[in-house]
Amino acid sequence: MATQALTSNLTTYDARGNAVRVAETSALFVLLSVLATIGVIAYMLFLLDPAHRGDPLPYLMVIVAESILVFQSLLSMWTILASGYEPRTFEYHDARRTLMPAAAEGDDTMYIDGRPLLIDVFITVYGEDIEVVRRTIRAAVALRGAHRTWVLDDGRSDEVKEAAEQLGAWYVRRLSSNGAKAGNVNHALSIAKGDLFAIFDADFVPDREFLVETVPFFVSSNVAFVQTPQAYGNLTTIIARGAAYMQTVFYRFVQRGRNRFNAAFCVGTNVIYRRAAIEEIGGIHVDSKSEDVWTALTLHERGWRSVYISDVLAVGDAPETIEGYSKQQLRWATGGFEILLTHNPLSPRRRLSGDQRIQYFVTAMFYLTGICPLLLLLVPPLEIYFDLRPMNLTITPITWALYYFGFYAMQILLAWFVVGSFRWETLTLATASFPIYTKALWNVITGKDVGWHVTGSGSNRSPFDFIVPQLLFLLFLALTSVVAITRDVQNGQPTLAMAWNITNTIILALFVGAAAREAWGPRPAASIIVATDDDAPAQRTIVARPLPAATPAPAPVLVSVAASPAPSRRGVRA
Image (tube, rainbow, N blue to C red; front, side, top):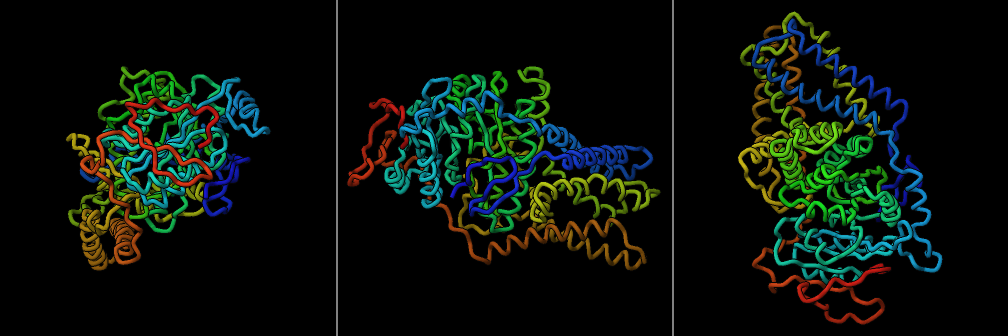
């Protein structure tokens, strides 16, 4: 079931109907953010003090890694402190009041400024399980407000077509999968002609009030899209919980803060666009694996405005397996690095405000933070094997710990405040994901195409096939820990390098343990097979109309788009 409608900024409900706290920008949170900022600055000044420098190689590795992390932390704090901005203005509330003027008479056509709206709802499908797709179709068709639901099936599944027809949605199957998800949406826009169009991934179930909550923002003629958060209802595995919790601060605070700078970007699902804005930029961006961020960036460069609301208006599935998580993160990181290396927001050629430049630059370089653990994992072994220390020997462990925990402890405290407890799954995934982000950076540098993978999709391959680097690192760190313990016992004094190396070993062991549990325990059902271009039953685009209500089920009506105009949809709910 979808989430219940939000009437408060403080409480929402998950997929099971349980109350969930929606974080607000309280005075305590602002205080914690300010203290965390002070801790970040103090730690960086400590590291950069020439008197504290150790041996060049480990010191350089620490400075590079920590500089990236500190930069991201400072910019995140700045953005979070701006998260009290409220995008719902008087104009919004007035538009919502008159949104469905004839609802009492049974006509739920939506109006903005007295003009009736044609609204399309797109569900993008690419091989997901049929029951998952049916759940989303059913919820999309039931959305309040006159609209037409379209199932955009790049998986070419007759089961999906039949489900769409039975549940009251239009079905579209195109000739090829060119442009992946973005190409799928652009193709649908050549058929559907709504003033607004919403997009949901096949596994995201929209709340019945989605259109009611988002459409009134379009009373402002410069609003290009309204984005709502991704929330998950399948937190049943370590991977799913870690992947979901990693995004908590981003969706609850960072995206809200970006509203103030007109830099909140699209995340690909749970979003509604103004068609005119997308047509102005030539459609959804197709030349990237992160078409959502690129599309938002292009819209902002053209002067359009975005809106983000933190209300949970759709619940989906986080990747449950290491394979699904790895493919998701590889795709996202590839898109981020593409922006950083090919379309740097700081370039004077970009038509962005100063705030937007900073926000998109932070977004583009975010996944560099995922490579930092690789450098930091190697620092303790350099001391254990080669006696190379990152910090000056005159620095006592207590002095170093005060500065270090002034930075990291405050970050953990902030996360605790947002999520409600310490989530070791997030720490584990963040530490163990460096091979994914390193691969993404290399792919962008070399121009390698990684292909398109649906978030959460998988196969029957062993999770160990995707974590070979982590396994090798675990073995290396475990042996290094044995060496460190033996050395420190002989010297009669424990060292910080030994403690860090053991800690890193435990974290990687937890990740490998999750892989073992996945490999030897019950496996999530694999996705259905996705058709290739050669599997297409006929060389034509297929549009199937929904079956009329309360009538026998006739054979589906198939029409070639080239020979049939887009249907009128004024006041249509199906």
